[in-house]
Length: 129
Image (cartoon, rainbow, N blue to C red):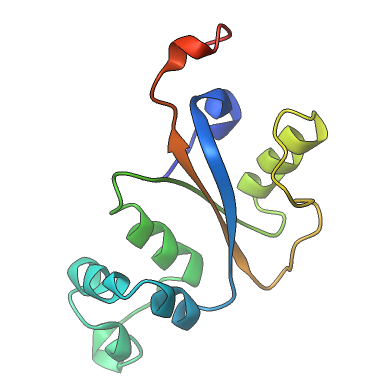
């Protein structure tokens, strides 16, 4: 599932890890099931995406967002260099609210990143929620 309110609801997530994606090809090779999900979403195979009759225009970040939204048991916050989601992560890091294990200010501008996380099951453990 795609997370859109991380800035307000960051306390409801745990087990965060950042995934760096250098290309769609690498993204698909990392999880074979993505080929099936792509075909379900776009009605043609990933290998045929550049065929003229398919009119495929989605950017890499849009494809990644659409496909990851199919996963209901994980939560994803997708960002790239200096987009609005990246600014949210930099703010959370600067305020020392979340330690991502990397400096989110220094990322490769030619890559897409995914913050993968789990929803906290027992919110009672946090008295600020």
